[in-house]
Every structure is written in C-alpha cells, then in structure tokens.
Image (cartoon, rainbow, N blue to C red; front, top):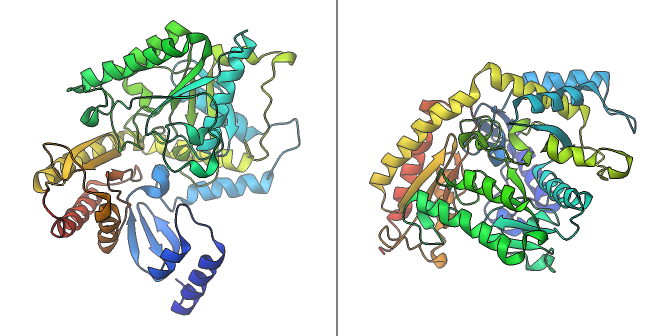
Amino acid sequence: MTTTQETEALRRSALEHVWMHNRDWTQMAEEGGPTIIVEGKGIRVTDSEGKSWIDVNGGYSSVNIGYGRTEIAEAAREQMRKLAYFPQGTTTEPLVRFVEKIGQIAPGSLERTWPVTGGSEANETAIKIARAYHKRRGDPGRYKIISRKGSYHGATGGVMWLGGATGLADYEPAYPGMVYAPQPNPYRCELGGETPSECAVRCAQAIEDLILFHGPSTVAAVIAEPVSSSATAAVPGDEYWPMLRQICDRHGVILIADEVICGFGRTGKMFAMEHWDVVPDIMTIAKGVVSSYLPIAATVATAEVADVFGGKDNIFRQALTFGGHPVAAAAALKNIELMEEEGLVQNSAEVGGYFLEQLHQLKDDHESIGDVRGLGLLLGIDLVANRDTKERYPTELHLGERLSEKLREQGLILRATDRGIGFGPPLCITRSEVDEIVAGVDRALGSVEAQLPSA
C-alpha cells in the first residue's frame, strides 16, 4: 500500500497526464478519482489506500483466469530471459506452440492464425482478410461488411463503424461499405419476434435480405458476436447461427465470429460458437486468450480461406511490430494450460448457471429488472421503468450514473448504464462470491429505486 500522501500525488499526476478510457479528468477530479489499483487476487483487487474491491467484470470481461496468477508472470519472465523479441523474417518457439494450440482447440478447420495485439486489431485484420480473399478469387467488387446494430467490434479506424454506434461524429467520414442488420435480442426484437425462435429466424432472414438487396457480388463478410456483450448478453435463438452459416454459404459471403469476449470459456464453452456447432470462416480472439496479462490477440482462419493466400503473389500484406510477441505468446500458452488444468470452462458453465438463477431471483424483487439473460459467465439484466411496455427510464434521471455510484458503495467495481448491467467476472469465481455480488446489486438497486419516480 502507498501512504495517503503518495496516493494523492499519484492521483494529481494521473489527472494531469493520463488520458483514461471514456472518462473526463475534470469529473474524476470532482469525484476524488481516479482509483489507483495496486494488486489483485482472484476476482478481488486492492487500491492504493488498502480498500478491497470485487472487480465484477474482471477488467473488460477479460481477466478470465483471475488476478494474481504468478505462474503466468513466471512464464513471461522465463521467456524474456531467453529471448525478448525476434529478428525480421523469423519466428519463435512460443509463438509456434501458441498457434499450434489454437489450431488444436478451435472448431473445425480454423487452423491458421494471424497474431495481433488486441481485439480491435484482430477484427480489422479479419475484415482485411475477407476483402483480400474475394479479390484473390476474382471478386474485387465484394467490399461491404454486414454487422448488427448496436454491436461493438473495436475502436480502430475501420471496425469502429461496425454496429453503427452513436458518438462517432468526431471521426467522420464513415468507413465505406458498412451495412447494418437487426440485433437478434429476443427481449427487444426489432422485427417483432415474440419468441427467441421467431426473433432468430426473422433476424437471420434480414441478413439474407440485405445481401440480396445490395447484391451478393458486393458483400464480403458478415461479422457478429456469438452472444452480444454490447447488447447486455443477448443470446440469440438457436436457429440464428445455423441459418446464418447457410445464408453465407449460399451467397459466398465470409462469416466472421467475433469471439474476443465470448471465447476462452466465457460462455461455458471454450468458444461460444460451439453452443450451435457452427464453424465460422474467420474467428477473432483476444482478452481471455491471455487473461489480459499481456497484449496478444489473433485472427484465426479456416484452411479453406487461408490457402487462398498461399504462393508468392498472394501474400497477405500486413506487419505489426508487436504481433506475435514471444513473451506474450508464452504467457498465453500458460494461461490456456491453467484454464484446462483447473476446469475453468466447466466452472464458467456451472457457476454461471447458478449466477443466472440468482439474477432471476433478484428480478422477482425489483420491478426495474425487465429481463435476465446470458450464457456461462456472460450475463446481463435489462433495466426498465415499466415491465409491460419495456419502457426505459428517461435519460435525464441518469439511472446508470446513480446506480454505478451505489454499486461502488457496495465495494463492487461494476458499471451500469441507463439500459442495463452486464456481468463478466473471472472464470474462477465461486458461488459464495456470486452471492456477494448479487447481494450488493440487490442493495444498490433498492437504494436507487427508492429515489425514482414510478412509471
């Protein structure tokens, strides 16, 4: 722990020099922030003043194995002692072992891996591969990318336009070729589906309608999260992904599964696409692949896609200085090894099921909870002012801000929005820790509800 004086000096320095993610330093200063975290173990972290917190979302739903795993630190240290980087035109043993492991555990013929450093880069690379693939095959007009409204696939120049998110005016003009399809959220089905199955079929058919409207000869790829974290863990009906696979096959469109959050046990399977036995043409991975201990991610292609780039004249031209870093690769290998040895994917399925049950019980006690959903340890609740109409609370009530503050008072690092609360804790979480989180959410909701007007 640091002294109070040292903590204040760090805060002042942070407010002057650190440009934090989606935060305003003026507001942080008024709130006495930022909180400075100094250590962690399991699902808990400790700040510079000695206060313990539960990090309900494990970073960005990314510290899958939990904090404080010295085994990963030792693996990174040992590799750095041997070799910290590599000469141009060569590779390293940890990277070869890493991509070999990915090829072994990934579904179907997903076996050739392009290493990058984060999820945004992985999705950018996937789009570039999809477009280049069609050009190599004599279809240069295929450049359009279909994504789902409200989804999030990264923050870099191209992928930031996927999902049609608001708040992008600063970065216009928009990236060309972006086409938006409905989100298959059964609770709020844009196309009026009254059951998960009906919503799934309608939303999948909407993607085929878009392909036909724009012309198959112009569409390069469809990209989607298996379970949408940005739509607060909305799980599509079981018909959705098999239909989407058939539609893409029918029209020669590349299917990209964004497993950046969903992968490595998050949904109770190693990869979320396994829930539907569907193999995408390209899969992107990050976050849980190394539990955020070091920056590494990857774009994984099937042999059928990758083989198009074989040969001198067909090289996929891209180089990233830190892509495939041997130290990060060694850390990722150890992370996957520990996940397998400790059964963390199974723990995600079992404890995630228990977590979902507890959230359903919470719904019984709070009228502001309209829906509870999720798979494994990717869970969410949808907040409403009126369950019958699914109407949300007015934005001027600042529900998300008020609820986030009450959650902090409960010792939970958990950000709520006006729309809902998402949960993505480390996969090592126990049932008793779930009980702590649910109890804290219960108290926070009760406190905020008492201050809100009835619908």
